[in-house]
Image (cartoon, rainbow, N blue to C red; front, side):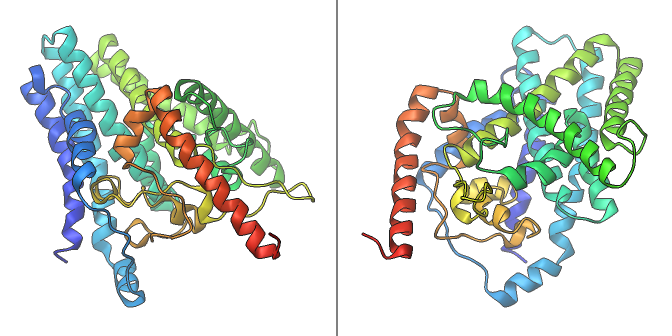
Length: 359
């Protein structure tokens, strides 16, 4: 149990958000200091761990409610901090720099405790987990993620048909636009396809995308009514910050990796070779093991606490936060990561040669 308590470190993010709002000034960015200063620096010197759980320990951790509770607690935390931020925005006279810092602070909160936790819960079929995921996606104005990610991204990952799989040489800022627009359009198309398959009209209330848009409009209308137009603008900006964080994560997770198209027109099956992995301990803890992304795509219903290191998965040279920062500077990113993509392609070529007995 003491070893499991390491995941409590993830709550340093909301504590830093709280401190940023309360103290203001130089502390206003709050969680940004932890996510993009403390963690990347520590991950440069701390060892990685590729250890996996034994089958018996994996079984006990799978059955433990403790790990689920850690996820569910993020719902009241996120909404409590949103209320505190919105209330403070009405009464505080923040400087321009403080405002920018606080918007970044809250955007990071929505991206980590919001979308990231929603991603984990959204892969679980129970109605209450789906509802919990949607509650965390709502303030990000990204409810469609639950549709596109599960039914689109996991099917089309590491192909040009997936808007959330970055191409080699693609600048992160261009990727952001392609992924944001493409994922939204894909979610509408996937939901329309589902309804037609069940003999229902895409224009009916059964369309989740229609219900999602209404929910988001109601959310924003409530903010405008309770807190005013300026806070409404802040709510929109921190939502953009939250889903922008997601898109940078998407960018680094599959950059340059592509599945081969077979003679029958289909793509080869998804394997651990089609996702960049990271065994850096701090990133694993703060992101609820999202960084063991290869195993997640290999078996999407595996809970975060039992995700495995897989030897065949390509490894990021830095942890997730450090890689995200590097991605913001395309020349540096290409210089470092294109070498890794070349190694991945060479490894794939050798695998094919060995499997066919040619050489």
